[in-house]
Image 1 (cartoon, protein in one colour):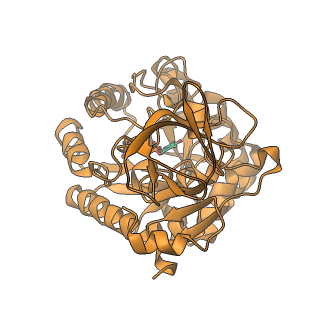
Image 2 (tube, protein in one colour):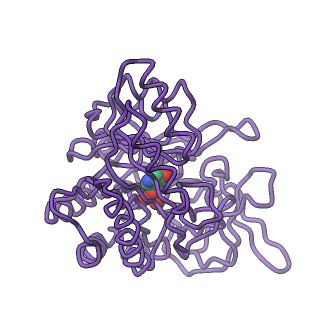
Length: 385
Ligand SMILES: *Cc1c(COP(=O)(O)O)cnc(C)c1O
């Protein structure tokens, strides 16, 4: 929740900007850490959700590793002080240059997404006189019941290797001398709020790892990826993701064999709720049928509504008066630059400060300069004290 004092401090800051509640981030990380320690699980933060230095440093200070999806994310993770032995690297299109840099950095695991990728990693490692540790990202064909653009584990998605290719993978693993096989990796989608999806994933993992064990290929690691959702509808009432329920369900459903390590890659669930996009009302335009609140923040600052039809709670921070119905829109010349239609919000006027909540994940990191707009800056709660 944004405090009165914080709103006062916002008065002198140029809008729009991202506000990060670092207390909430730490509180979230404490809950998360307590749960993974309870079960002896390992975690790698998915840098792509939010790559701000201060956020990354805070997460690293809780002992998490990094989950990267590009060569530059691997570089950033190393530069930010993550232990290379805790860096995992996924992505369907790793370039030779990216693979070589990750080999030089000595990362923990390449999460391989195709048969030809395994071969190329082996060849590049051989050329450098190295051995690459790899895991197989498996496409388990599971419906995550989330938006189609953030579903990744269905057979029609581009991600991962399908079980019908396992025989070919097994052949490669036995002949590729510069590869060390660690285990299986999964990531079936993002903003998953129906926990039974993860129980289904656990059952699929057991079926799939059996294939390898029956073929005498040991599985040392099981990486379940990320995807746990947050409450976009009620970010103030429900600010911390339901880690306890999630890990309890995983613990009850995942078959873990002696000596196996279990890994996770949380992104959104760690950083989503600590970020808010703060904006000012530029104009209230009253039409015959509706009222528009026109903000100075646009889809270039936070693209989720335009890209995924995502819902973000919107609050008038200046007034708590009687609520009226508004269509809240941004200034960018696109009809999809809309924060929400028919939203009940305390009556607003020019200059009022609005918070677009739950903007910490896939927000600032996706910002762009479309319409030649400036990039919104970050403000951290620790600096306002
Ligand atoms: C994006 C991503 C994650 C994090 O997903 P969230 O839904 O933000 O938790 C984890 N693993 C991989 C491979 C990813 O691409």
